[in-house]
Amino acid sequence: MVKMKIEFIVFNLDRVLVEYGAPSCWELIDRELHCEEEDKKLNRAFKEGEFDVRTLSEKTAQLYAKYGLTRQKLDRILRTYVTPMKSASEVLEEAKNRGIVTGIVSGSLLNFYHFLQEQYGISADKVSIAHSLSFDRKGRLSGGHFTNYDYEGKFRVIKMFCDELGVSTVQTAFVGNSENDIYAFRKIGLPIAFNTSNEEVRKAAAVIEEKDLREVLKYI
Image (cartoon, rainbow, N blue to C red; front, side):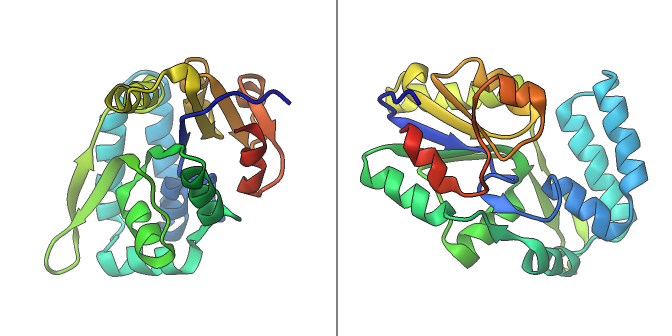
């Protein structure tokens, strides 16, 4: 195991800092609204290059509105399924104690991060969550804020944070778990694949098998 001087550590959200009982927050909502097949079609179209990440997220939000997602339903989903990954708070606090700046960069939904922050105190120094859902005064899904960063865009955000902090990407760690983390893994000093069975992800990073974030501390 090789240790290096890490000054900035960035975490993905889905299945890294948080558990859902689903691969992502999107798939959790799909399951609860029973719109999995329609969303799979949207994702296939995205992977075939028909539209970009922002459009995919906008179309997914429109699908959720069609299937009746409300603020109340989302709140029930959050309270029923969303829990921090084991040792998440402890590891974020320990990193700060060691003088390491913490970050969260994710293609997830800001609504999920805010829930974690409010209910469990999960937070970081630098946070960028790609998308969010908005609701009107009656609690109906009315739209949201969607960006075009994921895949290569994740690294662009990490690099932006590094520039703001005056930290080299070589002295940056990124803890991820899915194929949209691979591009960033190849660009930063310490890539860590956490709790993933994806072979391409595993090949691109140091691998942590256990679902316990304290294992990350061994590398920093």
